[in-house]
Length: 396
Image (cartoon, rainbow, N blue to C red):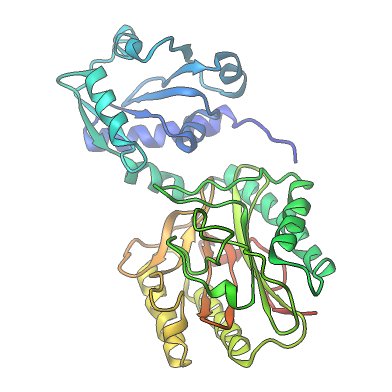
């Protein structure tokens, strides 16, 4: 799929919204250095930084590669940054005298924080704007929604092909490789941006049978055994056989903006416990589809989902066994763990333009996993599904 550059009007709208927030917070500007946010506000990912003043034109300061950044970014001020030591002088040359500067401290290493503080010196005080930028990115523009829709359509083609290449005796790793091939040949970017320290993810996970229920260190309901203690998630060499449920959970990233989707497959009938759990997962999903709309909080939806799972007698298996995660949904876009979050204690209300993945799942140690996941757009009237492959577990 051919990539298009972010339009100038789109960048201007994003920068303008951040500048409004900077003004309300009394900040003189923001210094953006993290790749995803660099792309969001500038349309390119250079080695360098983006300074967004409280008012006026942003400065994209590039160490490498200036030519590419000028080609890709629609910003008017794309300038060379020969050395980080020149940063204060460059800002001064453009008339900026800083006292309070915002940075995304949720992704800025402490070493770099101290380096920027030394570079900028007194009286500059660096303050966290992570929540501001993430909440801005949570509401997608029509331009972004169109790109997410396109990813959903293409990823649906990949999932539709899965039943045609599942074979008895195939390993989860072989199935994963075939799935990845089908995705990549359709233009999948081949990676998933997952915000946060130690949050690692490829383009998804293919899990088979009892090994799928292996717990992991990651903040996800499913993990899998993995191939090594160094990377404790995903396929492990488990062999596909009759009665073993196969879970394919994958992020479809064909435009820079992704969808998140999970489907289940089985050769022959699945174990009764997993079949029941899958039905309950569909009920949880339907409940969220019916209740979610602008103004409804993530906490309200999460508690309703937990209550439904408990009433079905599956509470201890919901969203993990022993140490379940405390969410059933998360925002998606440029990253797979954006706002909003459907989670315990999160009172942030849904808003029109939010895009989120809903993933009710169940884990049974020694047996396997069951569940479903779809990506939705929050509209004025409720949820619109953006992942269109049929939800049913496919019995092959």
